[in-house]
Length: 128
Image (tube, rainbow, N blue to C red; front, side):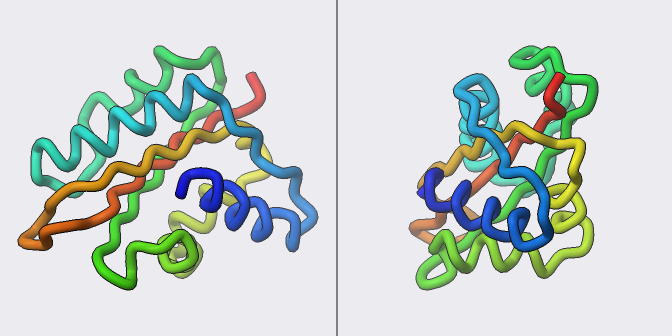
């Protein structure tokens, strides 16, 4: 799932002549923690400490975070990426040329009455 998200987001960037995002383990770890925290809390929102969580893993000047979740047939990498790209705010994050590194954290669990959902956090950072 995470590798497919990276591929799909990078296809969107490459269509616009932007450099591909590079996956980093540290950002992936931060993103996985973020997704797990959302499922644990049962609240779909950025944790107040999301920026501190991401900054602990990277020395980047700039960071950003995007969240998405899906259930059933909406829990595919294609649908999740399409949801991000349909949102002006999220599209701007993923297509920001200053952001060069990313980590995707896809976690499966129950959420908002759905027995099985995929919760995804994307943590992005500048090159340094």
